[in-house]
Amino acid sequence: MVVLIVDSDPLVTECVGLLLRALKHRVVGARSVADAEAVLRAERVDLIVIEPRADGDRAMDLLRRIRTDGRLGVIPVLVLTSMDDKAQLLRVIELGVTQCMLKRDFSIRVFQERLGRLFRVRVQPLSDEPDRAPGGVTGAPSQQVTAANLGGFAPPAETRLPLPPMDEAIRRLGLLKPIIARSDLSDRLREVSELRALSPTVTNVLRVVSRPDSSIDSIVRAVRADHAIALKIVKIANSSAYVRGEPVCSVDKAVVRIGTESIKQAVTNIGIIEQFSTSSVIPGMSSSDFWEHAIGVAILAAEIARLTKAINPDEAFTIGLLHDIGRVLLAEAVPDEYARVYKTAAELSLPLEYVEKRMLLSSHADVAQDIFAYWDIPQNLIEPIVNHHQSLANIRLGSPKHTQAISVLALANRMAHAMSLGCSGNRAFYPGDEFFGAMSLGAGVMESLADRVPTMVEDLRYAMLSESFSAARTTPWRFPPCVYLTDDPCDIMRVFFRERAAGEEEFPPRVAVVRLRNPSFRVPMTTELLEREKKLGLDPLPLITLSPKGNLTILENHLGGRRHIKLTLPVTTDRLRAAVDQILLRADAADAA
Image 1 (cartoon, helix red, strand yellow):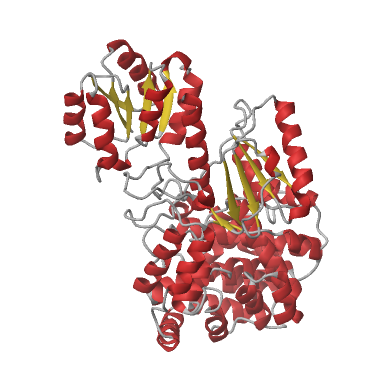
Image 2 (cartoon, helix red, strand yellow):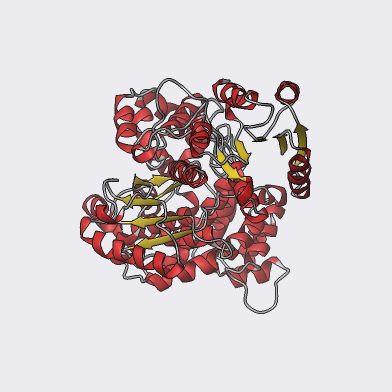
């Protein structure tokens, strides 16, 4: 990262520069505004650290130009100042600076913490209209969507936040017209399905395995006929999903360990990844992240199936692996149209399947119905894939015979999102408590899966993907230190906030997040928040509340001047991230003033 320091005091420039260089950033110092402007013309700068008093009033003029310049306006600005006058500080803050620190309060720890946030945030130049953030907060600078803050699934560079509030986003989605006829989409999907049928080698292995009189030797011979499949079968047998005792190094021992009943599903799964791991995807979507998410859902589905005995765990694994394959098919069959869908979902910050349904008249789950039938995938595997985004009530109404299987996949998918296991193009968090309740699973099960599954995913990534393909991955966004409170002991999002706060114990919470399922929980959640803040010795924290309609918060008489934003569930990562940056930015600005 390149950091431009604008300060007429050489001691400040040198000291801050030494710290930034120690953090592996390249530093350029400027003692005058003219020097700073020359640097900005000559090279790309990732962060500006500026003293508004530098070079008289010209530093203030520079700040105004930065925030109204289309090219420079996206650069984060940290004001490091010795100003004591609150009126002056407010004038600086109103220019849209990203962070503000007083020199008298400078500490290395706080500076490093703010740098971590600054290199993830991008702000938008000022316009005539006030920015609106989720929940109606106005007046703060907005954040640009980038690959860093969307975990690798960034929309094109021209897409900007602030995001429209959820009700406005839904309204705007409803005004959109379909961009392709159903018949045209079906024809193009059929062409892709014919090209992407399973390979002859895989088909032969499956045919041998499916014979009732097949012996271990005949299955081993069929597997050995394809060296790539044979190697992956050995790797799978040695993964944490199957490992028992000494590692195996031969195909026959691997087949015995996996079992004749499971080997068919294992070969099917290998064949699926073999056919689609090289498929084209829309710009910005990582194939490696896609398959990590698929493998994560597959393992979670298999583990939930073992616990509940709802369906065969091997079948559960396969439906987990296949559940989002419709997105790959859509991206390959209608690449231009799907790129528009993806861009629109990012701009509105809505779950991707909402926008698929509106603009293509079919979601990625819908298209699986005909395509999988064409591939002779059994109907008992197709039903869960087609319906895994449905509510439990709709599942029971529309697919009563497959409710258990669909619930297994729906819960596994929701948990994989909360655990940040890869991404198939849609980073969104969905409540899962109704599925936990329907399958009589407790909070202990959720915690156990959250602890065990990531290691299993890591093993199977190595076993099922090529080494270079498996190695590439996107680092998920880390939530800042927080207090998370929920009225549901089986709330899946607890896993996300637990993971995001891990390793941050040395820093005090900077924000509170409260999930409210209905108004009756407002009193206990308010009481719990106040008690938690008192126990930790904290002033009232900035607050984000999550609820089904985005209309609930804690009791009004205890908001007490808190900066707060209300969000609707399901909530996308970019909407949550924008809310965090907005609410912490305003809190930092107020603290500095």
